[in-house]
Amino acid sequence: MVSKTAATPKWLREPEPNDFAAADHFLQLVLHKRHVALAAKRLRKRRRKSVSFAAKDILRAAELACLPADNEGVAAKLAKIREDKALAPVQLVRLKRGPLIVADGYHRVSASHLVDESTLVPCVLVSVP
Picture 1: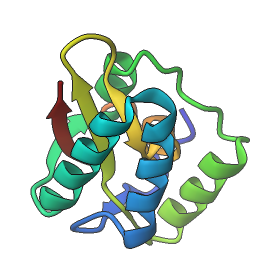
Picture 2 (picture 1 turned 30 degrees about the horizontal axis):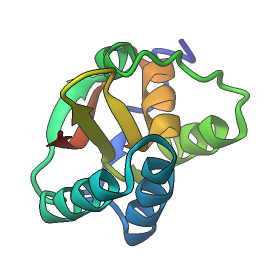
Picture 3 (picture 1 turned 45 degrees about the horizontal axis):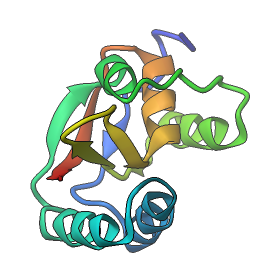
Picture 4 (picture 1 turned 30 degrees about the vertical axis):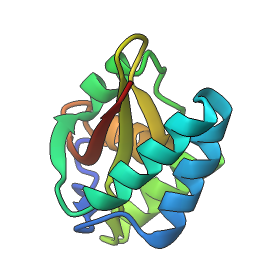
């Protein structure tokens, strides 16, 4: 953990436009083309309907390790948290089989986990076949 005295993350109401593009690019690597389009459409449609999960649970469901504080992206998010700037919600895609996909926001989840593993992280969560 970074520090219990670190500021609590603040969150935007919905992902920023560039977050959708980042999610689309990542999903192209891990999903079939038709599922990418479906996931992208669903993420945009649900962008204002976030649900929150503990950072530790997101990482566990996605079978991902928490990135270290000295990772460039995580360090930038930790700086935003210390500066009391809001972070965008994370975009998650759930498949019928396999781990949860963090389509966008791995650095935000890791930074939140480093502040406190039980930090609630707002997520836009969609399912695809």
